[in-house]
Image 1 (tube, rainbow over the protein chains, first blue to last red):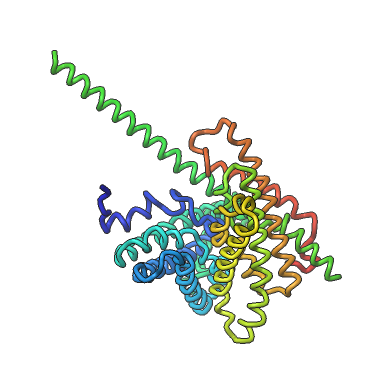
Image 2: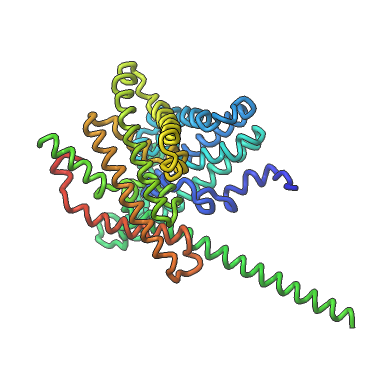
Length: 240
Length: 200
């Protein structure tokens, strides 16, 4: 029988082992669309974390009330409510972020991860577990899209700009693959900022993760085989 | 500029130049998920076309004649997603009643369409346009979706037999193929100068 996972596991698994973007390959639309800028990606991740946390909380509170037949529309209404809250809050307090994300704030409603967590986790687990799960998935998704955005912005523009979206921090532009402002030197590849770049970066990221996993599997198999051989040899030695 | 020309240009630009999947990143989940079967790709595409057109037809009047006069424009996302979800449900019932063979081809994709960003994305975008242009946007977007998902499925059939590194099998190579397709479609951008027609 399956053992109930511990609270730490519920929170930590979505960060790496069951990362919603890199392992489950869910929520790819915003992961490609808002990752031309590192800061917008972090902003998107924060809004996403808020939505998935709150919707998990409410849905797990209501899990015994919602009839099974109409559960999807109910979940969508709960999620859409929080997306509207996020839309109003971000357009008021962080208008630059809201404008840079555009329609993708509204599209959080149809993000497969939010609905997926509601369906697969919050509808069956306690409130505390669901909150931890929401937080873990939110943070896991945030770092994943931030990583993609970092690559795309640095390689695509040659610079890393901070303070453009989060206006409360001073604006700085770090020249990483280009010269300081005024010089013509730049190693940027603008393709990475275009739509094709998003597909390529995510594709290569997934391939690298698959390669690492394959390598680990191979190692584990070899180790198991060696252990088996050693055990067999020991057994043989014992018989003689 | 005559209205008809702008209508046609909107369709072409949304279908090819500003393609829904390759340049606006809507509906990638279903794009990747539908896999390498040409038949199911076309089925999915047709179902999306139908639902997008219906949703655009219903949501634009609701937004313009109910939400805006009532000063409730901020409720748009909730109303739109409810309309789309119930539309998908009704379309399912209708097809099931009318043609069981069509239901068998399209029916399995219907639940997936509720969570397809293309539908909500188009409807949400349309609030900024008039009715004719909204329908043109919806038509162009869905045709673009069908076109790309069909081409992509054809390519993936050929990829089946390709000798790939193990790590690239499955989703990674699909994304890279999509990236190359996006580069190809970017090249079509020069055909029409969208700026001079006032489309962007």
